[in-house]
Image 1 (tube, rainbow, N blue to C red):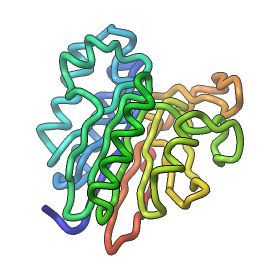
Image 2 (spheres, rainbow, N blue to C red):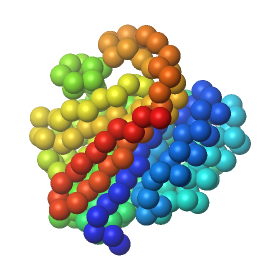
Image 3 (cartoon, rainbow, N blue to C red):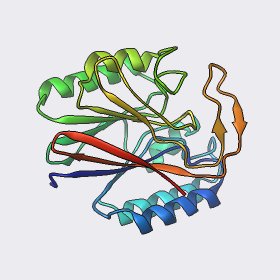
Image 4 (cartoon, helix red, strand yellow):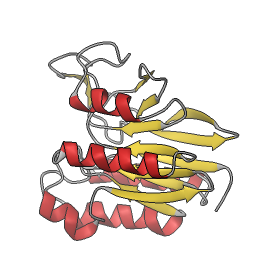
Length: 226
């Protein structure tokens, strides 16, 4: 396995298959094929356009070293389970980095135990937690913590990483324990105002994904806008 971990993260590609295809074209052309691709959920529109969406996911899987997908709130359970691996799952993606993908829609306590037990079993590894839902209602991480923020703060460490989607807005902050949180949205053009109501504030013309690198025990990242 590679010592340097390259990760491409995207989310919330539902809503416009042409936009998703454009994003996949760009990622395939510009990203290193040795990267691991993470999709933080909302691939489908509540079961519509399933075949077209899966076709784009297959393109990502064929062009990169690995692909790991979390389930979003718009991804029906039966449709998701037909095409993707059962969650929670763990994948060793690099020499000292593992990805744990969970379904943040359900069975939350069981999945927290899954994460906790894995970290206790192999505490020398660094973990990326991939889930769909945001951890707080504001992008600086300061207010309205969700179940997931409280739970993950208690089990993760400073050099772990959380990648999520759902909010359709750029966000990055650290939990109280130092864990870096990155929102990988947005893979469609719908943008949400970051407030308690999560209302649409405009249709931003840019698409965005994350390029993340783990090297010498340090996470670095940049947001790629297209």
